[in-house]
Image 1 (tube, rainbow, N blue to C red):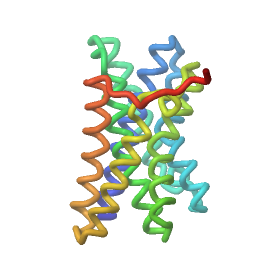
Image 2 (spheres, rainbow, N blue to C red; image 1 turned 45 degrees about the vertical axis):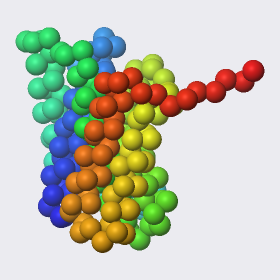
Image 3 (cartoon, rainbow, N blue to C red; image 1 turned 180 degrees about the vertical axis):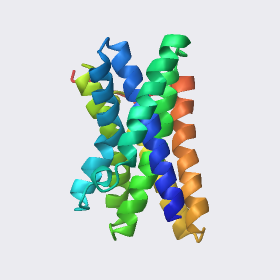
Length: 203
């Protein structure tokens, strides 16, 4: 499970770096700007998680592989965009996959640290949405977590499902993968069908 978690973290870093690079390119940033946005998107949530859980050194300082993955993913994304048209929903799809991978891996680390179920859900959600929120702020957009989109709520639902399955007696790996699939499917379904949370305005 530890090996699987590590590999999924690297995949999550790559996917979020790609989504950050796409967002930077859509904002017309230069190559350095693309790399900066890709980096903060990929490691922002995990950095906040590690700081709050008092995990030192932070994961990308302890192991530089995520930084290598970020550079490679950003370079591939930029090259792809120059050679082929980027699909209309590429950013949203990449973001959904990154959200699922990071939310569940963050929740797993919080659970292993002895956190309560509520804190585990919060830490996992923060890991999943933190980098994207920083990306949106830096590219002058309202963060997805603050919009009506089913985004952070998808992470909460998937993590909660994983914890409930564990309490019901399911072993760790199947419960983890079920939660992972739940976050990704819920987020992608929300994008496809246009699901949104209700909004409220002051009269």
